Image (cartoon, rainbow, N blue to C red; front, side, top):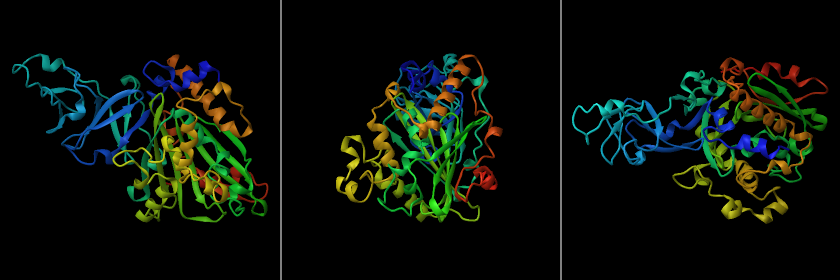
Length: 423
């Protein structure tokens, strides 16, 4: 459990709040590259860490991300004209380049010195792995660009999308790091003990702190097949990496992948989940059929989203379309879609959980360690120190994996060659 004070320290992400200042020290996903598909296309609204922003791709393909309102009369720049290397406010025609400089002020006399003084607050951006990243922190403390293995994989072997979730990033992150729940919440084949996670619902959790966060594993008794071991990585401040190489029945997946999520705070009570998937084998690209099937399985395909948004059609307002008959006979929840099942529980807790009322167990070890790391990092930033995970050298060679391990062989020894990045 957390005290009320520590809970508030971790869930409030506005500027000047401890968690808000921590997140502002990292490069964060702001939107997908596909949302700004072409130069001079329509601007896109972005809300990140409680700030209202607007993004656009200029004539030369550069991405601008800055405050959503024109500094003149605070008109919304979302309605602006994206033209000739700048975004022009349609209220009085003031135009700004991707660096926030005012490059035209047609409502004022020609040559006015005022133009050189006007600037719209903006943030640096970078495009990596099909994602537009932004840095919202102090310019003098800007860290190196992220270098996760999945960012280095070519587009032919990588799939990324995002979903919007109506709760604090923290309870969504906790759900992702909680490996024990998959034996229950994601049990979509009741009574089928061929499935490894159905055989053992009380995994043993190992957590080892690192310079980027921690490496952790779940160990399940698979009977005559040995142990089912899944090795994860938690990368500060809010990313999980996991292997999807072994089928739930113990065989090798038809298309082995490395999967993960980044939970990015929109504001205190909402977050965006960036979901990534990368081919495990460099010789096997991800087909469109696989990509489509993967999204349907998780419940985040285009058909699962409200058109034109990243919001799920199944939501708290319609009880996630729970099928009580299916819950009695086929699946543990009666809710379709693996991530949809997560969202039902995480948003059903309310926008922000009161963690002072929790009763935690041994299966919560990874969650407890994550909270401790985040709390320590907020205090480090307040002291003027750098938080963990800023240096790509601490994480660029890591890789998650899952596999059956025979007998009493330590999983670190059995899987050592598999836990090193190949891309």
